[in-house]
Structure formats: structure tokens, C-alpha cells
Image (cartoon, rainbow, N blue to C red; front, top):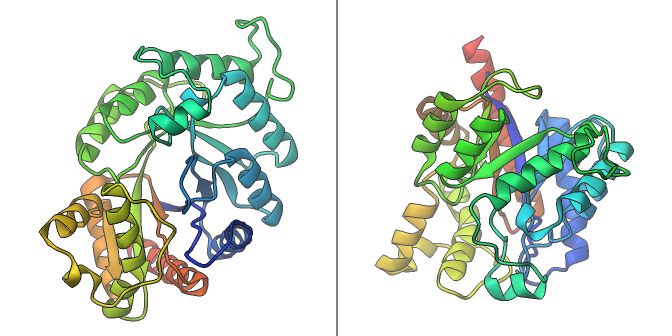
Length: 333
């Protein structure tokens, strides 16, 4: 049975506040927990007015404190932005506070543009080996194997499963070589999905953390009582994607009736490409589209994501998703 998780970018809606977004994140995580979702992740982004998860470890602590059983983690931490020791200390602290519930997904993108990266005092290292070396250093801190000569406190001995994230074949190769679970960002960068999964499964080497390949893929889900209602809900994220891809990022706007019809060819082409790994519609439509994605990819876990302007409509979308996944599980059984 395919497992289901939730990725929340902690959207800041137009007319809303960061405080409200963070309160919504905790409420959404509690709701996902009650519905049986396996994990809730937030992602590191910087310099974006519409995303409130920049201080990712702090947001994870906030959400973990508001929940009881669901795994909470990063999907992910952009490791080139940080010294591995700092991440070991942060997530070692989280593991001490919430034992057995913390995940750490690692990506190599900056989560920002170069201007913001410079403001973070990050060196834009072009060395292709820098990210793998940082991952190995981070593993060493958690293992407390003495290789660095430094004891991470907190961090040493922490039970924090590492994941490798990616939107290309690079992450698949690294995850396979290190024997780590792999998560592909198909919810916004679908091009290399099939190739990356094939490489990961073919080249996987068992490790102390993982005996066999375990793959996750991002998947947009906008669910409502009818197809038309779901299409309307999806228009908020569609507007945000077009704004971002055309150099005008914004806070999450309210939905717009007939938005796709109002776009020109360029805008529709952007959305057709970036959102091709999506399910949008009624419960029956979402079930059909989700089943097709699982059949195509064979992933062990789907990470559901959606940016919906109205918080209650977003919770309802998650409820429908849970009903769909429950029905799929029963049909398999």
C-alpha cells in the first residue's frame, strides 16, 4: 500500500499575516494527523513574500509541539546554505524534544535566488562534490563516529532519518550510493521523474538506515465536492506559479473563476508543464488521477501538496484525499 504524507510551504495569503500562516500550519498538521497521514514536512525557502517557512527548524518545532504522533520534518533543508554542524545541532535538538518523530530531507538548491543567497552570506560553491561531502559530514555528526573530531551537542547519537531530495538525476544517484530514501520534487519539476526513479532503484546500495530502495514523489492534490470547485481552488496556486515563473512572485492570491481561460498560450504552457503531476477534481476524479500516478511511478509514498487560499477548503481537500487513499487501500486488500 502506498503511504501518504503532506508537504506544506506555509503559504502567506494576500491580506493575511505570517502569524496566521504559522497558526494554520499547526492546525493543518493536527488535521493531517487525525486523518492518518504519515508525515508532515515543510521546506526551506528564502526571500519569498508568500512562504513563511524560512526558519525551517523553528517551524518544525512549532508543528511538532502542536501534534502528538505524526512525523514532522524538512522537505527539505537546503544544505549548501548551512554548516553541517549547525544542522546536526538543530535537528539533534528537535530529536531530543520530539523523539522518534523528526525527519531531515536534504536538498542542494539554495531555496532562493543568488541575491538572497549572498544576503545569507552563502558561498556559491560550484564544486559538484560539496553537497555529497556535506551530507557525509552531517551523517558523521549524528553517528558520533569521531571522524570530524567534533561532538555535536545536541546531535550526536540522534535518531534523525536522512532523506535525499531532488528534481534531477543527481539526487537519485547520491541517494542510491548512500543507501538513503529518495524524494523527487515532481509537484513542480516533473521532467526527470521517471529517469530519476529508475536510476535510484537500479543503483541502490543497502545501508545501516535502509535495506532496500524507498522512493517518494511530490503530487499536487486539489480536491472538492465537484470538479468545478476543485478547479477554482487550484487557481490560487496556478496564479502563484505563473507569477513566480514570470519574475513577479506574490503572496497566495484568492481563487479566480475561469483563470486558465484568461491566460494566454505562454501562461497555459507554464501550468501544463509544471503541474502535470497533479490531481484536481471531485473524489472520483482525484482517485482516478492519483491511482494513475501510483501505477506510473510505483512510489512507496506520495507527498501531497497544495496551496489553497481558504484554510477550511484546504482542510476539506485533505479530508477527501484521506478518503480516497483509504478507498484505494481497501481495493488493494
